[in-house]
Length: 137
Image 1: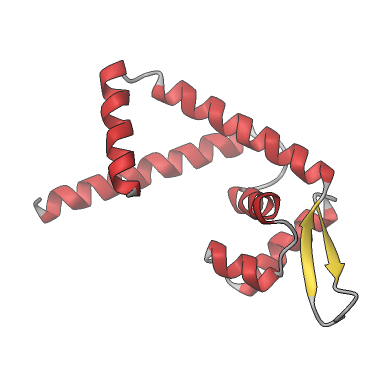
Image 2 (image 1 turned 120 degrees about the horizontal axis):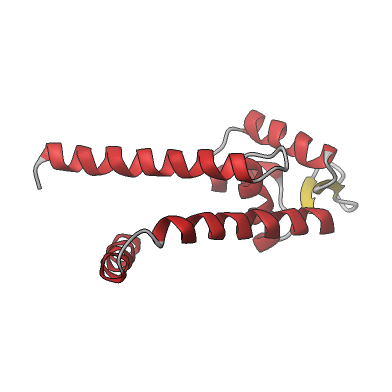
């Protein structure tokens, strides 16, 4: 594949992703960004976790995770938990409210993607699904 074509694919993919994030931010009225939702999702899937581990998995810097955590804790979507057996270890855990917000964020994202992908023909959606499956392997 020509280098220009690869660049065009990457550019178009990035443009699409950025527009999708902007649309999601406009439609999801919780004063949270995608990064906050990624942290909540990690906590929901993995249970309470050390902030340094979350940062590493999500590719964030510790200060960035600290900023995100402060907002999540402030909004009562997550809590900080101290390990009673070793008080040096601190964890972050999702709350029931955090789980509810995560569910709404997920539903909003699904609704947005559904509306976008419905613009494609059935054949286009099938081909796109094949491409994503190939890229995920």
